[in-house]
Amino acid sequence: METLDIISRLQASDVDNATMEALRITTDRLCSEYALLPAPQLLIEGRNWLQRVLALRAQRLTLSQHREVLSMAGWLALLVGCVEYDLGDKRGAEATRRAALSIGGEAEHAGIQGWASEMRAWFALTTGDYRGVIAAAQAGGEVAAHQGVAVQLAAQEAKAWARLGDRRQTEVALDKGRRLLEGMPYPDNLDNHFVVDPAKYDFYAMDCYRMLGENRMAEALAGEVIRASTDFDGAERSPMRIAEARLTLGVVAARDGDLDGALNYGEWALRGDRQSLPSLLMVSRELATIVNRDYADAPQGRAYLDHLTELSQAAH
View 1 (cartoon, helix red, strand yellow):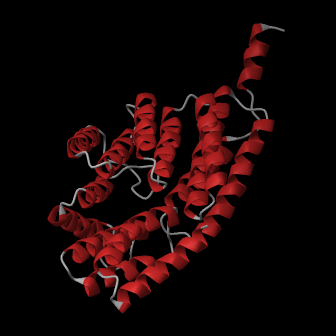
View 2 (view 1 turned 90 degrees about the vertical axis):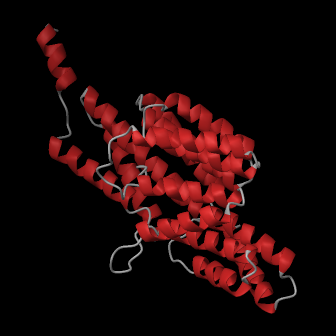
View 3 (view 1 turned 135 degrees about the horizontal axis):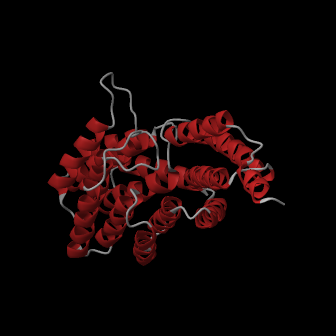
């Protein structure tokens, strides 16, 4: 073959630019609907589009198209894994996370690999494996040190240190995440689940200060999280984030001796249509522990604990 023929074949493709652009838009749209679209519906759509994207690998693609197809498949796999975990399918979510990590490696995409590590840290956090959170966060930080996910990895590490009661390491990790965030450009699409916006960092700090017993700081941050996650007309842009903020307010109220206020926040958080059950239950159990310890004889306290038990059983 002549050299020109060889090069022409490398540059030939069965997939046109319009198709690639449509897939880019769809991938971004699905990742942006994570917070609001019902989880079962998002899971179906995510899996369907993941199959369509992967099917393109059987087509003749240019080298750049091949890498981009892999990248889109990686983002969709990450999204599907998150939704699977939200719905309580821990085994399926871990398998999907590993697949996304493999795709990220094949595509040489540090961001996808970093988010796969972030998911590992999230899974470990909700199951109480705090040392596992730290290990996953640090491993992901090495791979994706210059990616936006590095901010969230630092935040997950801070949450783990807070649960281990190490105030100093918590502050070190939070400060690291803040510095990384300040050095990054403002995101184009704040709705994309795989984008870390400044308001989300308040959400992570809120969790840490609640765990460290800094009630007033946690309370102030919870109010800011709710404000930043709510539109001017009262619509909730980030219902899962708001639910955890309300639980934080509930924990603070319970510590202050306000059982009725605490349970009001606790029940309000459990009523949302869009939930991440593992994360919701993790924070709800913090409130439940206080209620069980300090208000075990109160009928309204028992009712909340029973509701939480039902939700936990449904998650399994």
